[in-house]
Amino acid sequence: MKVMPLVLVLSIISLAASVVEAQTFESNNNYFMGNASCTPTMRDVKVAMKVTEDLVSHSSCNVSGVIHKGFSLQLNANAPSGVSGAASAWQQYVIEVDQSNITAHTQLWSASPRLGSGGDSNLTVPTAGTIPAGYTLTWNLATDSKGNVTKVTYSVTDEKGNPLSGSPLSFSVPTTPNNNQAPIAALTLDMVGYSNGCDATFVSGAGTITYSTSTSPATDFAALGAGIPSCAVTTLSGGRGGAFTGETSTNGIYELLKTGVSSTKIVQEFVTQDSVTTTIEAPGAGANVPEGVAIPLVASATDQGSRNLLGTALDCKSITWRSSDPGATFSDSATRCSLLVTFSDNLVERTVTATATDAFGVTGEATVKVNVVARPAGPVPEAFPVPLGLAGNTAVLKGVVSGGTGTVTAHWTIGSTVLGTQTFTAGTAITLTPVDTTYSDGTETATLTVTDSTGHTNKVTVEIPGVAQPT
Image (tube, rainbow, N blue to C red):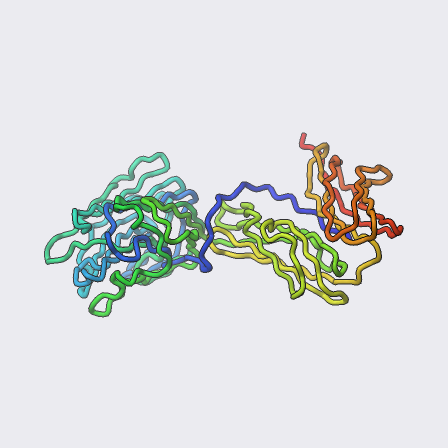
């Protein structure tokens, strides 16, 4: 069987992430941070968004007849249900970005309309609807001895760490009328539409969100998942909602986090326009594969996220395999880029599918169809594909042999040159000792030939694609 060569992928190694959630966190559905019992409440919360790729949206939003093109970053906080009568039972700390300004304001909600605004910080936007790469936006929520939020300070710094004109901006939460100040049981940060229930589509964007608190003990601060704790305010009196902001986004996606792991600091990546591309290099589409013979499966996956993540290679542990053959067996459940599959019957068409999942829970699949045929007599060799390489560098030939009788001899050749010979007792899926050769300036064909004690011989070829060294 002739197998397809690997495609050369020029990439960087992606950051590892613990993927434990089955869903994608996106739009106005980011994780809530806090603790499930709402006790103690969070103290002196700081949330910092570091933008590593320009965060851009030109989506339009009509606010009282005024058109704003941009988006908002909303830090939404829920108080414990015991203070649901407070004017600040649901607290919104908002940074808005439009075609001319970055503004910050505070909205405190209860049965009455929002209590008030912290005023606008009119910071010039370098490019319309954009937070440039290198900028950091920070929310600092100061609390008193009871955990009540008494002041919020917004700040925006450029790529050199210099504050923008008008930054920082502070707003003190008033104490009158009664119960305007309230503690925080859970909070979440969402990238959404500008205002007024609007939606935003991002052109690009990526970065990190860092949540920190002085809550003590540290075991009481963790990522909680998509649900607000039952002990927190979720619906305010007067019919107002307090669970999720009404604004949304079409393609703002947040990294999956491990829930219930306590820390005084939690770091989460975010990205826009996320997708995963999965490629199966072996077996080739339409290949004839013998029944009962271990066949190499090889796949790779790249994260086609926003531009700074484009083409980032995913870890092999992100790839899983399945087959339409209910009797198919896989050799290794841990090494997912490269493993073996054995089909259980013949004279049928079967599929194998590789699914890759990135750190944001986004998946990409690839499927190939193969024809399962009758197994030939004697030992059957299979060769793993060889990736593209530079002339003069070392290429590694790998193979596996199934079946045969007595002693089996396997040797690799290129033309009349023997590269290596191995002798072993016949068995199921015998992995050969790898054999080294040298890439040439062009594509060569290596042949793996196996012969058993009865004289039965079978062979398989694999291409060794090489290119000239750069000059």
